Image 1: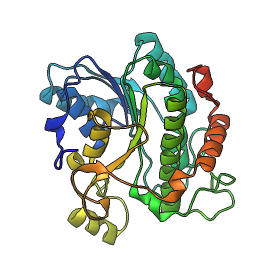
Image 2: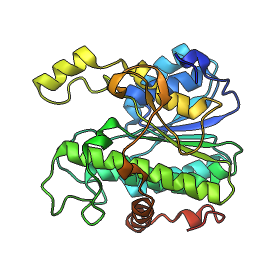
Image 3: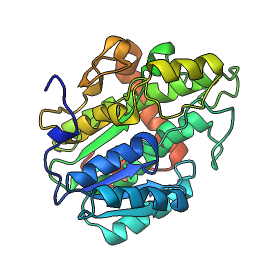
Image 4: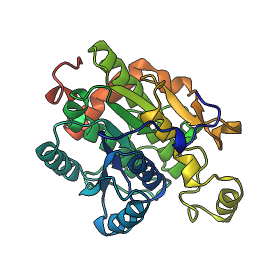
Length: 308
C-alpha cells in the first residue's frame, strides 16, 4: 500500500458502474466526485433529489465528461429500498461497486419507517437489504466490490445484544446505538466475505472508516464541536479509506481500512484492525439470520450460489 495514497492513485474507472448511498453530501459526495473524475458511471442513491441536484452540478463542473445520475433511495424505508432495486434491475444488468455510505450519526432516539431503531435500521439493516437485493448484479460482474462503512466507534461498545437491537429494554444512549450499528457493519462484512468465498465468487466485501472526519460540524455539544474544528480532517481526506477499499488493486475481501494516523483519527488510508467482537463468527451468523428475518431479504433469493 502506498504510504500516502490519494485520489490521484485511483485506477481508471472508465466502463465501471458504481452505486453510492448518501452521495449528495460529506463523504458520499467526495466519493462520488472522485469516482466520476476517474471515469466511473455513478448512481447517486439519495433520499432528497433536490439536494442531490445541487451536488450534481458541482460534480459536473469537475467531471464534465462522465456519467453521474440520481436515483431515489431512503435507507430508512425498506419499501424505498425495494423500489430502488426494481428500478435498478430494469435499467442495469451489472454493478461493479456498491458503497454503503449512508449513515445515521448520533441521532436522538427515533425509529425508521419500519420501526427499527434509527442507527441499526439505517447503518446496518438498510445496507443489508440493499446489498442483498443488488447481489445478483454484483456477483454477475467480474471483480465487483461491496464497501461497508464502519467507524472507530465500534471500539466503544462491548458487543451487540441481538435480543435487544432496538433498545426496547436497554436505556438508550446515542453513542452506544451508533457504535453497535457500526459493529454490525463489520460483522456483516466479515460474514458476507466468508459466504462469497465459500461460494467461489470473486466479489469482494470490505469495510472502511473515515477516522475523525469533519462531515457534521454542528453535531454534539460545544466541546465536541470544538474538538471537531481542531482535530478532525476534511471530508476529502476522510473519504480516502473508502475510495481505497473501492478501487485499489491490492484490496482483499474481508479487509478493513482506515486512516493510518494516531488513533486512526487522521491520515492516509491503511489496513486497520478491529475488536474481537467484530470477528465473532457465531454472532455474525446469528446477526445475518436475524437481519434476513427483520428485512425480509434473503440473499438466496438473489444469488442462488450463496450458501446459508
